[in-house]
Length: 115
Image 1 (cartoon, one colour):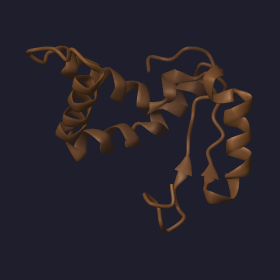
Image 2 (cartoon, one colour; image 1 turned 90 degrees about the vertical axis):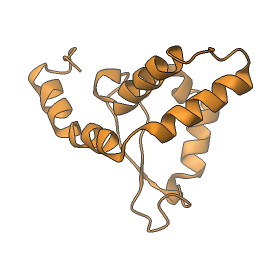
Image 3 (cartoon, one colour; image 1 turned 180 degrees about the vertical axis):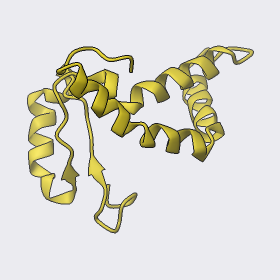
């Protein structure tokens, strides 16, 4: 976080998935909480998390590769290459969609949304 947001304005976000709520992860977050601001996220709410859209887009790009990745290193390279192909506009659009995602979540009283 200090490398990406050396100005101290970055926020750490995670979706409270079970793997992120483990004792090890929770301890790490507590020990490093002074290094960043933590965005409090509703429990298990992937429908408002833009990373889900990014993973989906990466999956589709990688699935279209010919030949497909055959090793874990091939997959890593394919994911990195695909990430670099995303336009800044695509990522900015996802960030700007957050207000709509939260509004949808509030309208659904915390239930599923179209996101």
